Image (cartoon, rainbow, N blue to C red; front, side, top):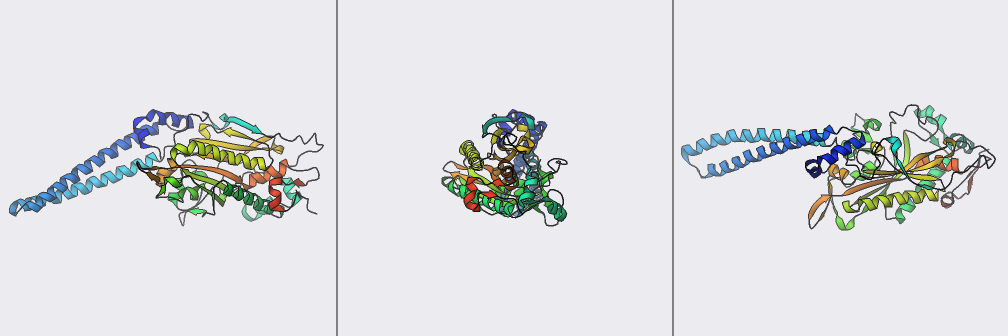
Length: 423
C-alpha cells in the first residue's frame, strides 16, 4: 500500500504517478474521500465510546432512581457504540480495499511511457556474426532436438501448448545453472530457500499480484490456493506480520522454485519453443532492507544479475523499464535482455525491482529502532530464469556441426566442455 502521508499531504504526486503508469488518477481522490469518511467514523465511534465510559463511572456512583435512569441510558448508549463501531469497521474495510488498488509511487528517474519507451542504459558483449563464420544459426528448438535436450512435442502431448520436457543435457544444464546461481548467491550473502509454490490469498495479494497481474495467476478455487508465478511471493510473505531487527538488515534470500503463469493475453506470441511457457524453474533474489538503503540495494541486485550473464558469456543490454510497464508494486525496474541470434533481438532474461515499502505495508513487515517501528523496503531480482537462459546459451554458443560450447563458468558443474549432437 501507498504511504498514507503521501495520500493526505501530496496527492498530486500520486495523481502524476497514476498518469505515468497509464492508470486512473481519479482513484487518488476516491481513496482520499474514503480516508476522510473512515476518519470521521473513527472520531464518531471514539466520541460515543468516551461518553459510554463516562456514563459507566457515573452509574457506579449513583443510587436509587438515578441509577435506574442511568442504566437505561447506558443500554441506549451501548447500542449507539455498537452501531458506530459497525460503521467504522465498514468504512475502514472500504478504505483498505480502495487503497490497495493504488499502485506504488513511481520513481522520478523511471522513463515515462509504455512498453516501448524504455531507456537503454548499457550494452555488454558483441553478437556473433554467424554468416561470417560460414553457417546460419539454428534456433533453440532445432538445437534442442539435435542435442536431445528439449522436447516440446511430448510436452504438448502430455500437458498442452507452452509445456516442454528438458531431457539429457537439457536437464543437466538446468541443474548446472541452478547450482552456479546458488553458489554465486551464497558468496553474496544470500540464504538459499526452497519455498512453497502454493500460497494463501493474503500472500498473493500482499505482494501485489492480485491486481493488474491477476489474469496471469493460476487459482485452485476449490482449495483457495494460488500457484506462484515467481518465488518473490513466498519470499516476500516469509516475514509476514513480523518485526525485523534493524541491525540484521539487509536480509537476503535466494529462492529456487517452479513458477506458473497463465500467459493470458499472449496469444500468438512466442508460440515456438520455450521462451514463453506456463511452467518453469527460477532462482529469485529477495531482499528486506531499510528504506534509506533500497536504492543502493537495487543497484547491487542489478550488478549480481549482470555478473551472472557475463559469466554465461552472452551479449546483453540493460534497460530502464518505462512507467507504463512497471508492476504495481515497483517504483523502478531494470531488465537485463540477452541477445537471441535467430530473432535478431534482445529478449528479457532477468529483471530487478525496487518495491520500497509498498509490499511491506500490505504484509505488515516492520523494523524497530529507538524512534519506533516502520515498514521495511523489499526488492526482488531474478538471478536465473531457466528456459530463457537455456535459449540464450544454446543459440549464442552453437557451432556449425550442431554442438554447443559450454560456458567456462558452467563446465565444473557439468564435467564437459561441449554438448554434442546425439547419434
